[in-house]
Amino acid sequence: MAAGDLALVLHAHLPYVRSGEPGSLEEDWYFQALQECYLPLLQVLEAAAADPASQPCLTLGLSPTLLTLLSDRSLNERFLPWLELRRQLLTEAPAACAEAAADLDAQLAGVAEQFLACGGNLLPRFRQLQQSGVLDLITCAATHGYLPLLRDTPEAVHAQLITAVREHQRLLGERPLGIWLPECAFYEGLDRSMAACGLRYSLLDGHGLLHAQPRPRYGVYAPICSAGGVAFFGRDSESTLPVWSASRGYPGDGAYREFHRDLGWDLPEAQLEAVGVRSRRPLGLKLHRVTARVCSLEDKQPYQPAKAAERLVEHAATYLAGRVAQLDSLAGAMERTPLLVAPFDAELFGHWWFEGPRFLQELFRQGPAAGVRFVSLRGVLAGNPALQVCRPSPSSWGKGGYHDYWLNETNSWVVAEWQRASRAMVERVSRGVGSADQRRWLTQAGRELLLAQSSDWSFILRAGTTTELARDRIHRHLDRFWRLLGAVESGNAPDPGWLAGLEREDGIFPGLNAADWAFRLGP
Image 1: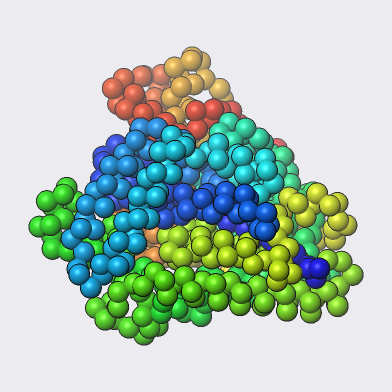
Image 2 (image 1 turned 90 degrees about the horizontal axis):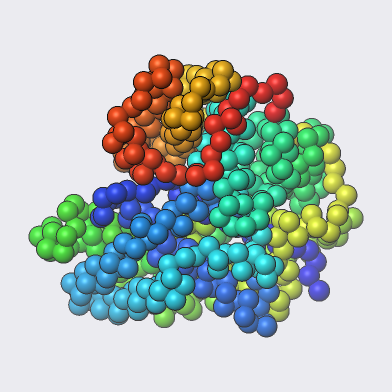
């Protein structure tokens, strides 16, 4: 008998990186995540669901921007040629990495076969896993906007939330009840806005519950309920650290695949250009292992798949034993079943940590014998537990625990731009428009505003990686927003060719309703 429950929660998200230019860096972001993370995760979950000895169950957040990419037929038609190019490059791998190259080539071939088998459409597979009880699918804000920094214009927060709810229902066939708040970021009153959009549960970093008022009796080991009627779960750091930390956790083990060394850096530029790769960059072709925690990239040793597989079995057993010890200890001190909530970015499993999907498979395989019961957040609440009413604390799961990673000297300038544009959108929408054309322009302006609000661009500016791309994205969407709003105000139609191209390139959220920005007295 399990002494308690373990809720694994994965958050799958990419910004809207659709590019009309094949071979772009942004396209690489999506295809690498598709190849390394989303398809392997689906395969693992489907296999576990078919295995009577396994008990797979987890909560999975699919962001609206990622859902849009997954449902974009023209974009996904380029995935198989992208895979084939990488298989071609693997033939150039050094002899010392022949075993690793053969293993990766087999993985790429398997991914291609899996992609073809479902006709390149992953969404029905996610829906089927939800219907079978393996997945609890939740949403996120429309473009992963960092909501505490949008709160000065409540209508901007409402538009992020209600657009996400509608898009999730449109693409997955069921209205979501749960949400992964972008960066797990919370501010006072956000729960009322969530409830107004039909969202009933979410999760926060541990201090979001531990600093709540009053302090929850069971800490992070049981959900609470806000005065606005939303249930909140808290992250258990002891359950997450071994999995996500490269320095102190499993991904840093010497047997696992090294993330930072890539054939895209190792091959001569002429060889890359010969197959159409125009610039040196990571290509997702990694053939070395971590080797040692303190080891230069040049000294990394070739990856040995069999050794990594052995370590996975050991690490899964160690992880489960740790959770059993936690739950046994808690069970003696609680009057209810203790719950451990372990949230992660889904991209950790497969992209950042290549062996991650198979680690999950091992957890589900070993879990029943170890005495660990996997649950979903919705499943916990379906049992109608009594919840303590508390006011969650402002918090995030970013560095520092609050909002400063998205509000600092590198990116604070963006906040004023968001606020100015949001206020203008509310004012314009609240006055109404005089024609169907003006409504069309205003609707596209809403899309551009949402796209400019993505927290990914602020994160990149702070992290210092591809900052030019992030800055360009912010300015591009805001420039388009103001041009469209100017057309609505003046009644002068924008250039038809420009508008058609814009609607094609940024044609996200076909059901977007500009009226969602109308002035609101409440949340």
